[in-house]
Length: 339
Image (cartoon, rainbow, N blue to C red; front, side, top):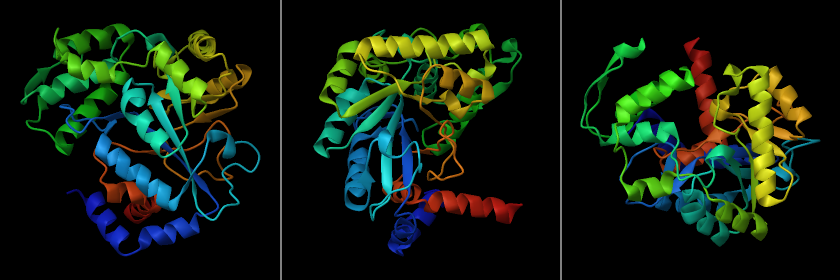
């Protein structure tokens, strides 16, 4: 059990989250998920929450929060609420097929709405994202050495077993690969994964949504869809022309699928700059979402709305602390004390 989980268990049992819920009762927080997978899913990943954990999380939200749509927390008076409970917006990045097959039935059971940010070039493609290919391959590995010196990189020791130590290594490697150009990154990914990196039962849950699934959810009216670029590019590394292309193409592709205006955008990896915001405004995007953890406040611009990331290694106590605002408060306090 990590330090955060230990704190979260104590904080929940001592009533600390109740205090923070009262403190934030007129504010709203946006949660950032990626995927939800069955409990017997054989690959560990921070990006994919187990189904039983997701159910526990939704039950906690039902008891203590108002789950609302994005429209209720953006625009004038951003983040302010009149209700006596904190507001929660549920979002998913990347648009995995498991959003439809696993998460969506649970959301409907609780009558919760959510927003999915789609990577439009991958829709209905049956192709996995490069980072999921790396995660699958390394999580299957029993350890050893990964020599990337031929790509002007390091020689890495892959931790054996599973758990947060191995995920920390994978997360570090993914960060390194995000900084590579597309050609070199793809070559490295092929070196890591080989030809067979995931069984079909895993791939079918990690490929992106199909057009029919998106249209089904859109027509039911309880799911909204936004843009996450055309190919999951890190937008700060693009030229102005590339930036306009990926945002414009993604919006056009999604709008042609659902027959509705795309109004919201989330930044891949949370990275953005003033150029990106200007292109989003020009493209008709009304609000954009970061990966900075916080409740929405007056100091957050409409194109810099924070989100709290929820992952597969979060216990229900850690989830409770994250959504109440306690974990963010503690993290800031530790930085102040450390400085």
